[in-house]
Image (cartoon, rainbow, N blue to C red; front, side, top):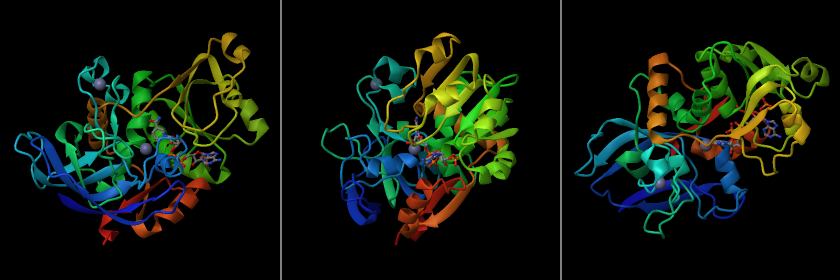
Length: 348
Ligand code: NAP
Ligand code: ZN
Ligand code: ZN
């Protein structure tokens, strides 16, 4: 067994505190990764607070994991000790259903295994995430990190990156399209970078007027303060696509009104309240409301390779793990520039 240091929440909403546990000995197909960096996703906070009613405690969050391979099982083909490796939101799935066969493990019909607060295939071992010194994962669920990418800045690609890359690819967002991105946080700032890289005209739709200069620096062509009714009015019927990354409840009608006829609101944020939209708002304009969940393993690797080739990474604020509870407070105040990443060397 592999003794592992970590930070964990012991109960719903609790502050994270030091915690020790053991990882399994690597099986034939397993890769042991010494974690160097882990991004802080808003989903980590949703899980700590049990917002989705599925959290298991003690809970070690973290699914934007980057590190160095320290050991591999006998059958492992893709990795050797010393390689840079990465793990995202999933560590297993059934591998046999139609979705898994298509490389859409995030839609596994028999249930995927989340990187934390999931159950391993033995049905009893609770998975623990990347705010920890090491992780053991089947190589099928381990990604290759392009050598050229700085590890701290690359870590957020494993969730914020793929969650924004995947829908923009699926809807073929590109030249000639007007893309709105709601919320300039961890996901939102990656949505801006990818939207710009894919050739769309990007507008940030933000509640924070102070983020205007950053939005432009990140690649946005335009910036709208969504608490200003006059600015909202100016972008009515404008966008082909809007990527909605808001973590908190909001009025969807406001944003749907910004779509052209036939435009699509792509929801990736996970607020607690239902999506409440008047039928007239979509029927008369054949606007669409869609969702998107992270991405499968092949597309996640494709995204990492794309980022390696185009030098795309997250804008990060690197913190020692002892500051993670403060980072959550700042995240709740929309004060993230634009992803916290934990330097795991601080976990002593
Ligand atoms: P984040 O870094 O906290 O960013 C959220 C942004 O939303 C904020 O920076 C802020 O941007 C805006 N916002 C507006 N009102 C807010 C409020 N009352 N409270 C907090 N933020 C507010 O979060 P994230 O990590 O990007 O995650 C965003 C959401 O996506 C979360 O619900 C998360 O669970 C979900 N998520 C979904 C997937 C998926 O696969 N679908 C994957 C990862 C995360 P402005 O200041 O610009 O308004
Ligand atoms: Zn995430
Ligand atoms: Zn499956």
